[in-house]
Image 1 (cartoon, each protein chain N blue to C red):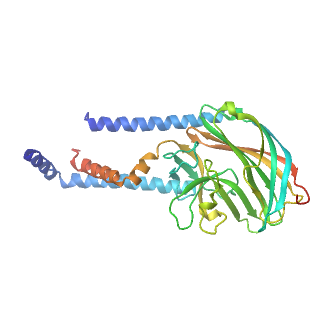
Image 2 (image 1 turned 180 degrees about the vertical axis):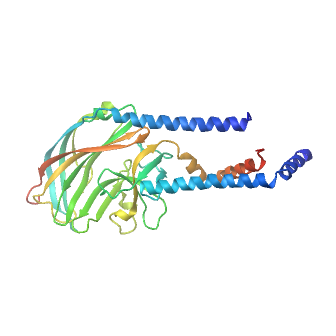
Image 3 (image 1 turned 180 degrees about the horizontal axis):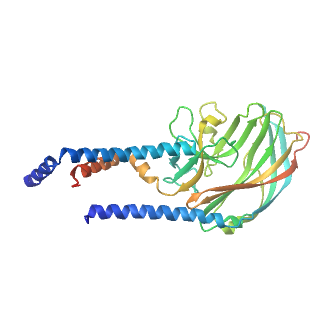
Length: 181
Length: 167
């Protein structure tokens, strides 16, 4: 037991400063590249969330909890049948449902939109804010254009059991410090 | 160079890359499918055309919908979501689209069907514009893949109209 502690202390002491700095810079570069890719995706797809994780079962059997959706937002008008991701004012969670009704004003071009989850019996009026009857363009973050199954479970687990997130980060940190190159 | 950590990392990276590549190819293969769906909708009856107590016009109708969407299914298809919508123009709105009925088609066998049904969702106008209104009925389909890009299209059938008086 004491021997193992002594060995770990020795290995930490034996890391040269330059090596440690190189590792820190490499880590920083990796994180920054990831950020650059994310921001670039935001520009290309036109939406602030180019990828979302499906959190509920309201669009089953097409989208299950844990799938990820690729989003795109264009200036094209919103039409029935499109699967859109929207946020209700004052709430954080994005909702992925299908547009079932559209009313577009002649004069302003503004739209009133009603949505419904494929697997729900009723439309989303109950989800909107008090007194709100329609969604408008500014509520809609993007349209779903593609999808990958199961990949989003990682995010769901890390959100719902944050201890796993801390464990992972701690383990990665330990690996970086104690690896020999 | 041959530690467990390196091997596990290499294996993980390779398998994720291979999976991503396979998903992309599966999605790409959908481009080569030959699709010719067909549909026909008849209005069997306009059941009610009324003015709601607090304002807007509402119509209830019975539809006869027949469609053959079998050619939309490929090996990468998880389901097809089909729905019928009414489209019309009013003095205030350049476009109104109201979904009347929808169905989830899980496989090719169920993709050729004929159904008589009243509208599943309420057809309510923003105002009193439905008397004598001419409208299109559109059958839309949304092909949801097992992985990859989703595809949507529609058939527009014009020439339907509502009665001139409330009933």
